[in-house]
Amino acid sequence: MSARDTSAPRRILRQSFENRLSHWLIAISTFVLIFSGFGQMPMYARYGIAALPGMAWAADYHLTLAIHYLAGAVLVFAVVFHVLGAVLTERYTIVPRRGDVKESAQIIAAMLGRGEEPPSHKYLAEQRLAYAFIGANILLVALTGIVKVVKNLPGIEMNNTVIFISTTIHNVAAVFIILGIVGHLAAFLIKANRALLPAMFSGYVDRAYAEERHPLWYTELRPEQVEPASMESDT
Ligand code: HEM
Ligand code: HEM
Image (cartoon, rainbow, N blue to C red):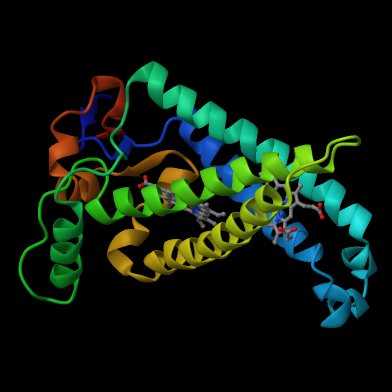
């Protein structure tokens, strides 16, 4: 019996465990923060959500506040972990570059059948812009959240203007984050983008997809990112 190399490698490792860990810690804590944050405005009692079976707790201010604090701590940890990881490994492939707005317009035009899609590096220009938009608003909500935690500490008297400004930024950034998430998830309605979904679960993407859509990244892959070709018995 002999084994032969049936094809080129099938899959490419796109997202390290560390990247997936920070993505999901940020995503899950953000969903919990949105739910518990809006719970502090007494909307769940008002709009009948607390009347749904098993949902009475959602109108309990002290409980939603405790949940908000806990998820806030997870979010701050994940942000620090992600930023430190990028700085220590000097990997900034997702940071926006000059010309990204124009390149995003070209990608969208190509999806609508007008012109060719420009060759992309690890991320498409629009992914880098989405990252900056969601990332900046997460930083704002985290920093103003910390100000609000300090304000709530016993014995702290904080200036009313500082409280007003940080609460306004906290709420506006929260709304922008929700819009960013809607846009992020809507991107997967487009078939071409769906090939990226496994990257955030198993870490791998299809080789042919990487070669075709991210050719500038594909040529720079390190050997350990390439899954060995499947070996198939020819008997
Ligand atoms: C609070 C929720 C979430 C936040 C804040 C968030 C944030 C981000 C950001 C900033 C990026 C990088 C830029 C981009 O590709 O657009 C990203 C990538 C990604 N996210 Fe999310 N995300 C969230 C939820 C989700 C969910 C629910 C899914 C899947 C069902 C998902 C799947 C992905 C995938 C597949 C990528 C691209 C990976 C790649 O290019 O290799 N995300 N996310
Ligand atoms: C995506 C992330 C977040 C969202 C969507 C969010 C949303 C909200 C909303 C809607 C409120 C109620 C209105 C207000 O008092 O301003 C709130 C309050 C608050 N948030 Fe957040 N928040 C987020 C992250 C954080 C983080 C990371 C922290 C802490 C580090 C934090 C700490 C607080 C505090 C202390 C309050 C005020 C509670 C009170 O005194 O009544 N938040 N948040």
